[in-house]
Image (cartoon, rainbow, N blue to C red; front, top):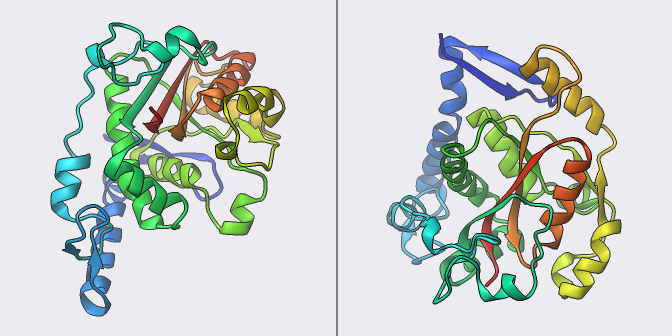
Length: 283
């Protein structure tokens, strides 16, 4: 019988048996269908990439397929430290040879370079509050997680926490929403083990500022122990275990200071292997 581990509305793990798991697999199809019907009835949207008319989605079917549906990651052409695309280098990029900002991470796995069309989409998502892009990016990160699972063992997802008060002010956070979709619709175990203390925006700091602030910017969440106990009880049958591998989920990696600081905290909890997965990385 098919089983699916996911979270309920209270954040607790539940196990769905049999055909009920299909409800979670089809939740995005229902959502997309409703958006399409409303768009056909009341409005005509434009694709954020090519500006063609599309019904009920932020991207047209052609751009979804060509830009996001068939991305391939050639690891032989990626830096073994930061995951950036290599130009003429071999093994390690020039930036990581001069300054390695990933001392606590075992692997960094960015899906796209931060340029051209993906840069516009990220801007619309983060600054323009286009929440309709969240399911799109969740699908993309799901594909990246499946690629990771080919070489990694079981892992848990740990989202980079938002600034204090952001969800209260704006009503949502990008990576929190993506991880909720991945947890509820794809069955990934999501543990919110981290907390952010700093209210300043990291994008306004240079590399030296980010490195200097990272020690005081992040820490363990208030209920990290209960999160770990719940995971241990569900997946190991008793308390006292911690996940062997955690995947830090972030949208944009700039200097690497944020994900590396989060990795250091997770290692302090006893997690032995930490990987960072991001939508994009800045060149």
